[in-house]
Image (tube, rainbow, N blue to C red; front, side):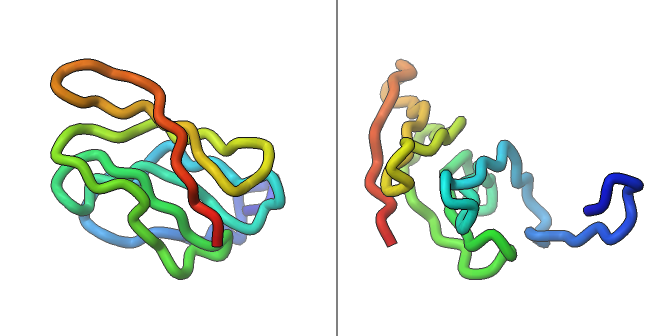
Length: 93
């Protein structure tokens, strides 16, 4: 999108909520939270919106992904048995 609001391009298109995007340190990938599988899970896609891949798979909530500076891992907030903790997840290509 340009500064004047033109040239907007949609990166995700499904009936569920996709939110909290974070670009990888090299700008090649985007981590985000999606509810497309029934609850909040972490996904990673290429910066152009292609090749989305689910990274987490839990019956509880996974949210708030942040890239590690090495671009190969994410720190997320994962809820397990009612408790929220931080998890480090490998997402190397």
